[in-house]
Length: 356
Ligand code: AMP
Figure 1 (cartoon, rainbow, N blue to C red):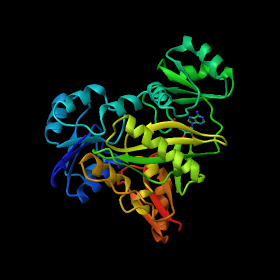
Figure 2 (tube, helix red, strand yellow):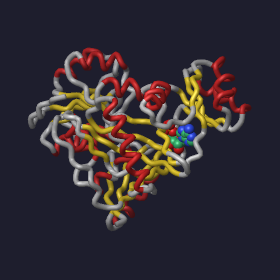
Figure 3 (cartoon, rainbow, N blue to C red):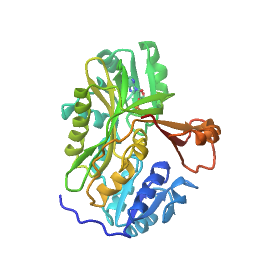
Figure 4 (spheres, protein in one colour):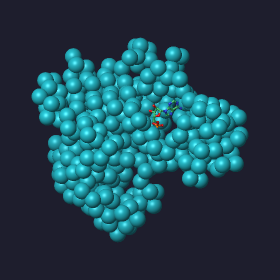
């Protein structure tokens, strides 16, 4: 694929105005681009740092059309964008990464089959399109297992653990009739992720894998380097590259991986910049946000080399009370998202601590 470099001053449309859109906007502006945010909610964090903001629901086709016409390229900070909205945008602007990555990552079943077809290990899974399919799924997957909605799940939402078959009925009730998959419980020792980028000319650059700790289904911290052998590290990076190439992907993508005693199992892919890549802001010359902007605008990629050991910690809800103390810590960079309201479970910012 050949792409001309998008000229300075071009406008990058970003679907979603959360913290990822905010940090993408900053990176875009640093490279001389303008960011135009499309967001359905009010007071999006990205609006503070972007050139333009459209506030409209995703079914407002007139607003989507005007937005798309004002942009030279369109990208996104979340994967659950309605297909009809993408169709409207695509009539007027190129979307990067492309639709295929979105189609696959929007549906856990499609995603699992895609990864399996690539020869990557995934947790055992069974389709549970409705309640009637649960018995057969339990027979093949057993317990412990996790019932996950096929669509619209994130940060541990839309999933229920089954310790025994007795948990099946209440778990199904929580799905509210939504199609789901039953996933075998992976007895992992730890979780890692690879943040990887592919340019418009097909070059691939991966950041060093980070080790992730979740609390209550939400990412708590990412530590680099991750506990991986040299072979595991190479394998993890190659897995990410395989996904990027298979999708003819342009942009940054996150691959979440379970590390077991025997193997690396892909949990899911996120076709966007990723919370577990925030450490790159203070550990690499070109961070994941700039890397994404470089990729989608036809720039060459940064090489992704890590020059420091970093621990990224998310600031969630009342963690904001710790900011004055964190600001006094040495070797610590505080990144806040400017959210007006603090709520339990809400990501308010993060800190990157340089540990070496
Ligand atoms: P997900 O929304 O699929 O990323 O899941 C959120 C978190 O739940 C993961 O990061 C894991 O900590 C845990 N989890 C998800 N799927 C499994 C699984 N099959 N086995 C064990 N833990 C899981």
